Length: 377
Image (cartoon, rainbow, N blue to C red; front, side, top):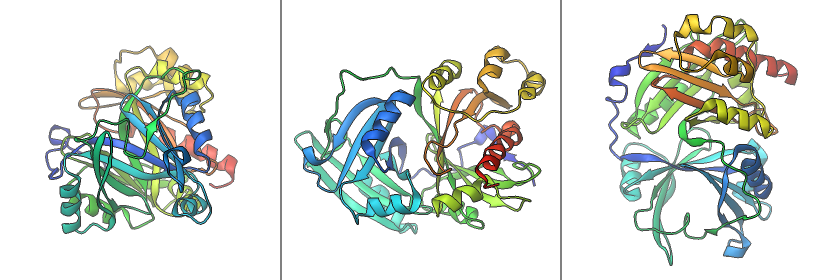
């Protein structure tokens, strides 16, 4: 088997019965929300946006919300011991707990999902303040990751009830050009990929738009398999990875060992100018995976003519790939947490709808070099 790709009807098989309007926010459980917020502002160019904590009457946890264009990150830490947030961090380390999805009707989305076999995380709840009301509901997905459905059509506040505006007028590093969440990749244990593909098809109405097996994603030492799930409008895309047999421990195995469950491996964020974005991120201390310089000697032979000069791509380590619809440019950070788990992808699409299959081998060899340094290969 090799890659399956049907670009002309890429999203046509998705039912999209909820429907999903886009990614509302991503909530990360982290050990120190105040310091994490400072990191994402300083290094990634996010802006101060909203806050919940002791000053807002929240006695259990503290959350800082940072924003860049359409991307909202909620960074949450417990305020006392023995909490569910704290137990989650103790087991998994810092990482994504909530993938919140913007819907028109959070009750309908929840009821539809439950009727189709979902496991409940949060029954529909209405939260109100002087700015209106928000309805939220939620279901479990792989590992302890959850989807929260957010209905905010009757709300005019800064973020959610229970939050206040958070401003830092004397410290707001400029944005770096990140626009929106392009896709999010989940890693699951061996044998679970098809189970979760079925979940997204049956429960969420998604379609499997791309499939990769270990012939597509392999090196001399490691391999993995992946299937990409998408909703009907193409705004929500979830590749799901599982390890495949190899001579050594793959990046998915390493992730599962340290995260101790299935979870979000990386967040891909879009930019309209990847060269400018990556230059700024590097100048702010973000470290990226690096492929061998020889990758660039034959890149135009493989992908054809592109708008960008090769020199800055080579200098910055940006990868290029092409499909029937166009091409894309992408680069991957090293893990941004103490455990070798979550990282970010920066992606610019110039028509391409795929995920960089032509870069898989070079990329995964770069990951293996990092694994070798960590002693986990």
